Length: 375
Image (cartoon, rainbow, N blue to C red; front, side):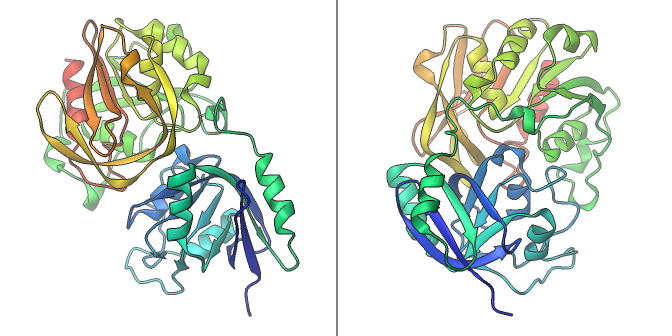
């Protein structure tokens, strides 16, 4: 049976016609962004940091190895929609339990294929990430879709953490990686540390890596106060990744202020931005963000270059860092701040994703650094 037409309508007035994929007849809207990774589409789509966003993959052929129950980063698809050049009709991988098309259908996620994703990426690189709508069906009014895209709330000032955080504290017990464990010789540590992870939209593989390095983890909601965190008597506190504008997550910023100097802190992505805001720095929205698995970052302390996995639309302004904070990592693509550490208390954070899901393992040492800070 032939699939219906789909239209991708951008707020700048550009409309592109293609074929419907995913939940046929559904509709999606959000901020259109692009990711340059060649693999890892399942981890990307289920990453809570993509809440409110529609993902364009620059790699032209997506879905060829299917999906499985082990590679999800949360309990559902978090991205609002999907834009690809071609969704593979064939699945070939011994771990696959379903196709990406069926997975999108079951989750009610709409998408579009058969379009020139290179053109879309060029638009986003020149004009910036922008709001969009994907609709399926015949006789669609492209101009009306553009107007609807223009009325989608901007990501600036948007706190999306309530949509992705846990509703109640829980103990993380899914730490075993089995045959996919990286550096398994480190997993048998007897002197384990108690870590409280504040969930702004945490990825499961971050929790796996913390567990692997000897952490017993209690995950708590994004709105948990500093007092309630400290009542759990943690050896350290982890600030997770998550979606939206970091400056809008005001309760978390106050929580971190109350934790500084009272327990070691490690942050990733949104957690990095929240730690920076808590010490008085500012954040700003990047033109089109950093999303991919091959971003070069320089460790300014060691001079080493790390190839990193990244997913963020905001960044910390290094010129606003106070004297107590040191920029420890820099993104070599555009010289943006990729990591900080505080000089007076044990607290550090990075803008990228050292859990590498998907991505390289160059930055795995940061989890060990966090454990060492709790010694």
